Image 1 (spheres, chains in turn purple, red):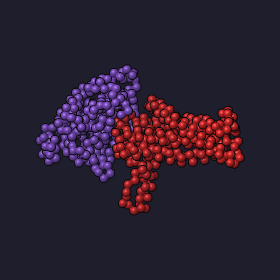
Image 2 (image 1 turned 135 degrees about the vertical axis):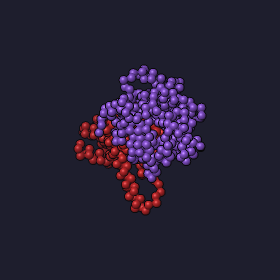
Image 3 (image 1 turned 30 degrees about the vertical axis):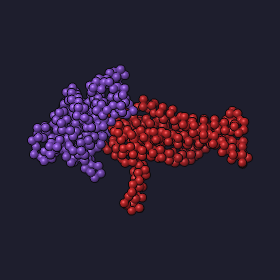
Image 4 (image 1 turned 90 degrees about the vertical axis):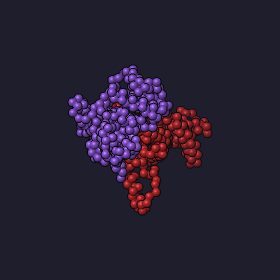
Length: 262
Length: 280
């Protein structure tokens, strides 16, 4: 079994030579009991690229993201992060890989016993021990300013709206300057104005940070705005991948129906 | 990679009772199988926590927070329970010993009863009620709102941050809380005794501890570290495997208290026997 240092060195090498895609998913299968959720999903994302994963509710979009960050394990198939297969890695080894990844949960998953400031500082407290308290405070303020939440430092998650929680969740996901950003329904449950603001924010952050991003959404308008490529999931498999224009030209019945209804 | 997942298991089978279409014998075997599977999962959970606890980085900040949460905040309740037990013991022992003409043994009966058994077990049950429910509900709520997943996604080991710190705090604080229960029980036992018949505290203690050695005091006090392990382990395990929203949180809080109290009592049976063998 590889040590933590070996995992980290391998990661760094792969990032530097750019030989492997940031995220590569191959023939991923996952079932819960008798219900097949992922049925041979394959996709990859390069550094600086944004892929939007679209599909109807319950087609396994969120499960796919959880597999990529290793919160769930696949029944078969592989997930490679910068060329490193994450199957069989122990929690601490996976931790070395996760430091390079940011995850925005669908319901933000902010720590409800902590203030907004403490939520964003959480990854820094645990992984940037060399940072002084003042430096950490400055970094948190900078992150919150990036997402337009600089005034909410002392607020509790329960005191802010769903859209604001998403912004704070995004700031927390960006705290360790990740190479890979996984966003689970970043605009779900938000009004059109808040959705637009979140989309603009994601675009701005991508331009500044050049992350490889996978955005799970059922919002076609949002996907069109923020993604370089789109992947449409149906019954646990990718029906089509490509630009929005390529999707529009598709003859596949499900693709046409999805675009018509969206 | 399945060993990393915290969400795979279902709740304690004994707590979730659902009607079954299976014949009664098959149902019994299923229940036994689920019960054994629960123990297997608990063993795996314990192994992961133990491994996380002894490998860096160490979560000292969270450990100190839990020492305060579990220790200092349980102190008033434990002291009160110890005091009430001391009074009851004093009154009951006085009544019984007077009947059999052994009133002079009253201080020794109270002291030995409290430090040998009553103090440790009362502390164990009070802590499993207060702390077991607290840990079970807190971790369950974090689990169903994906906060534990968020910790894991932030590259922090939740077994180390959440479970190891709480379990270690329970283990370390139990003997200290037991001392508090013993002390308040002895003081109130003396007060109840002095109210019925004048007796100085000095005389009460001298008479009570006559013939007592370290073997009467240390093993029963330190056996509560095992109670702490049971309470922390069961509550963290039940909390971190919660499924099913608010109802699941309620089930986990309840099962944490019920199971940890039950296992504390069962462990006490074994520990008393071992203490009698090794510290006669």
